[in-house]
Image (cartoon, rainbow, N blue to C red; front, side):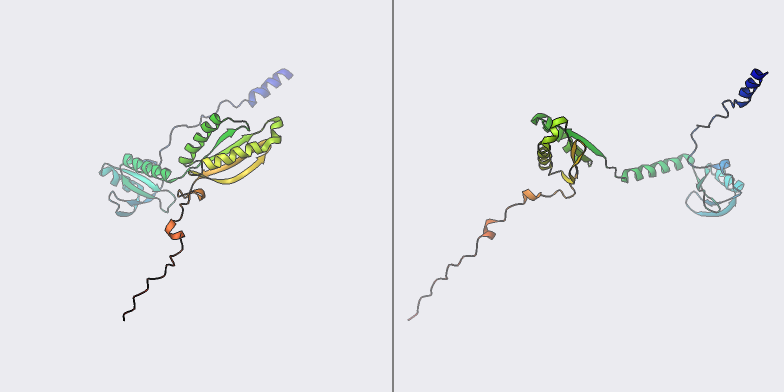
Length: 225
């Protein structure tokens, strides 16, 4: 009896799979009979205002033109609908979304790693990658990774970062000065905002402007006797 009771308890606690979620892709807006409100404010095919209509009359007006009634402002009172071909509406909505996406500026931080003993070949390889990233508009985190006794020679890593800053001065500028975190020394560089001459590249002043004006006295005029 106890075993049966236990089995019954287990059986009644089983819920089964239940209803499966509806994973079908929903339309970006409600159209025609999917619009479940009594009245809507209708905008015509050419953008003209048709006023507030009963939902059945609005759908009928769209169907008579071979078009759809598409809900464009569901939160309005009453909701605003537009008479338009739904395929065209989807195309316009997708086009606006793509244009908005293009205007968004996404900046990522990419990391390039060095060791205190990084040789010239490896340095040049990593430096070129950092240059490409800065030219593409991304930020660069340059990290010196110390291991064991290398921590006593942090100046070696600092020299590498100083050299990197100079080599990339034409395309990037330091946004975060060298800082230690654990066994890592790093700087963060961003794309150069003003791509003019750097401080070390100011042109020399013209030689004529540097010379003082001539103090040669004017020639003496001859006395007329």
